[in-house]
Image (cartoon, protein in one colour):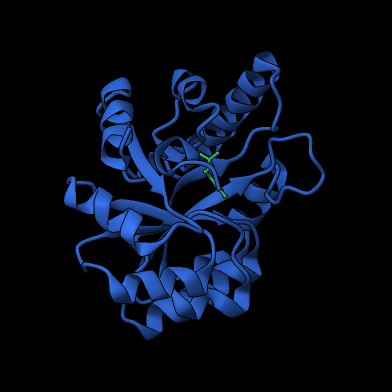
Length: 220
Ligand SMILES: *Cc1c(COP(=O)(O)O)cnc(C)c1O
């Protein structure tokens, strides 16, 4: 099947209120153009310089999502145009995003990354840390950022029960933050969870954004 057929097939299988981020990381621009010409315009990347190059070369009505771990010193490459930064996991990073956003006269949408997987290596907050961050004085002063939800990555395992439990945990954390900090804020509404192997499960557990790469563009 072609890239566009893969996208159409996934779009048909997910609810309309769930946004599909087509994860094009490591894939050539031609692959993105093929999807774009088929009518799809929402892509995700996880390397700032690669994203910048693709942004510069490709049509300007593409909506670009930064989905991976973002190093503070690389925010500058994407701050001028990125639609959503999915994986914010420190005050230092938030402060840098804020600084770069203000430089570009923008407010940048961000998700807080939660650590839900068992693996040690994955980044992210736990609920207490996220609350501490949102309660801090530093956070109040960030005018260039807009927190619109949470993001997480489940453990890479065949154990569906475990993956489901981790997605449930992310949804619970989302709801805890919503009621304590964002009750009046309608646009705090996103739960970014689910990849090629587990997006159906993620949607069953309340995902509003799925990040799907290999099922669309082939293996990397
Ligand atoms: C690569 C990546 C994805 C997509 O993974 P696939 O298994 O290819 O669908 C999703 N989210 C993040 C953060 C990624 O780095």
